[in-house]
Image (cartoon, rainbow, N blue to C red; front, side, top):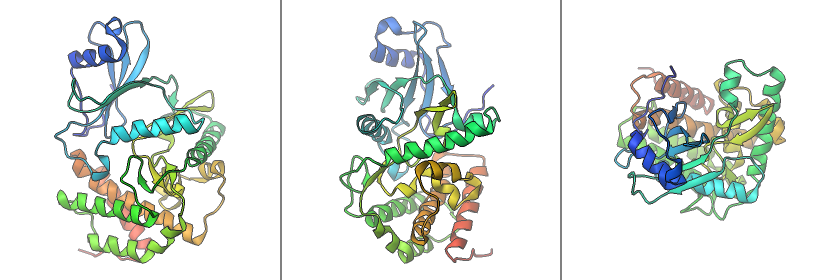
Amino acid sequence: MKAVTESITKNRQSPQTLRAMIERAYGIAQVPEGEDFAEEITHGWFNVAYRIRLRDGQQAVLKIAPPADVAVLTREHDMMRNELAAMSLVREHTKVPIPRIDHADLSRELVETDYFFMEYVDADNFGIATSEGRLPDEVVVAGGRQLGALNRELNSIVGPHFGPLRGPGSATWRAAFSQMVEDTLMDGARVNVDIGWSPDEIRAVLHENAGVLDEVTEPRFVELDLWTKNSMIRDGQIVAVLDHERALYGDPLMEAGFTGIDLPVFGDPTDFMRGYGIEELSASQRVRRRLYSLHLAVLMVIETKYRGHQDPATYNFGREQLDLLMTQFGRSPVTP
């Protein structure tokens, strides 16, 4: 039996409600019979996702946003609408493979939140297949390079501002990224999360290094979550990129595929970088990249409170990575 990734943001629905959603999307003739037509896809942390079997045997994927009464991070408000906007941009401006959207319902009539149905991609999850040793080494290398190349194509989309796709935006990347960090710190303060460092120390590191952010003068589309587990592979080719909900206009170096540059636990980024066309970062690019990892580590710690995690493993992991990054910025942890 599959282990379910638990989070209080997962908005699971009854078979009766799922049938009503299917009818609205595909028509009454496609409403399935029986009780085993929906299988939860378990490896995500935020939305609930189901693999749906329609009456004629076709399959689809249903994603449902969190319940309206569950607290989420500032950047996560209406995040499903951001994903739909991102997918529209990707489809319109690139040839990056993404699932087809079959139906999106933003009316909040059947359920109190947004949901959409999309094409089911019959392929292996690249990250899971790799971790389970089911792919030859040469396929793993080639897949990593493909992801880097696809990321470069996504970055070819130029936005009207820095920050969230749907706005409001900022005129500069320094302002947009600084606001992201501040929003995250305030999210942590609201639920009294101990991140192991004073929020003012995080702010000070950002202030001391913010000058490098001014090198980013053109807002580029950034997925933010483009890594192996958000891609599907078939016959050695990446056939779909998934989970576009966190996309924004910013610095391409903020992409998840580059995180291993600062945090080795996230894996060797060499293949991704070569596919993208980068061999080595400049000194100022390294500082920018480290700032993005710093923000990621703070997020990882704070998210655990919002997800309602009972197991401290993810929290402890985030704290370890945050300590490592603050050390790289010349800070020393306070010994209890």
